[in-house]
Image (tube, rainbow, N blue to C red; front, side, top):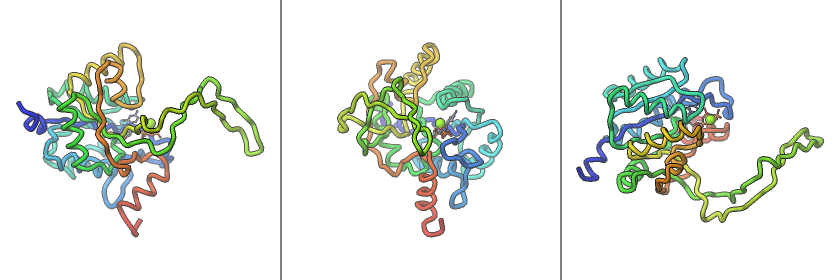
Length: 253
Ligand code: CTP
Ligand code: MG
């Protein structure tokens, strides 16, 4: 099979099981409604639009399994989809997603992972990332770091009281050359054998990473970056939700 035919077979894990603490809304972020649709549906749309998606697994919090299933089936009636209960950390939600795919007999050669709260991903970015994954086995979408990144010493954290209340202070250990720093986004797309191995190793070593690529890197496998767009931000803080509403609803936001 050539790269083109492989391209037509990728499965997606869309983690949606977080509680959205930093956003502080009363319901989890993927289920907030904007412009008549949940963020989850907005995020899934471009993956469906690639025409290459064979199956999607959506880990959610237990109480949202039914809602997620209803919303996705209503919006994407012909899509092969499974909604499962997620885990206590993003990594465990993905792990459960991989287990669910195995149990369902889904053996797609390529597996993409994409945060359910990055609704501005485009078909072009997904396809470029998939092409790089087919070429190298592992690829992610990322953007060059905008700010200078500081590495700090967590052990040296000092609690300094002042008139405004207690504030944590961190000692800078190192400033990496900004040109070498990229901000990882999603999708992150992998040869499914490599991704499964990475998650097995993480389980064995009790390693916890904040993205999927870091687990693959820990295997010693090279991961490549495809340059994306800043619009593919993750809805994390209230400012991100304000911007999302503004971008999706314009002057009606
Ligand atoms: N996620 C998940 N399972 C978890 C934690 C997170 O599936 N146990 C998902 C989130 O629903 C989100 C994505 O992973 O779509 C990225 O995580 P993040 O932005 O950190 O979302 P939350 O964990 O919900 O937010 P916070 O960290 O502020 O609580
Ligand atoms: Mg989180």
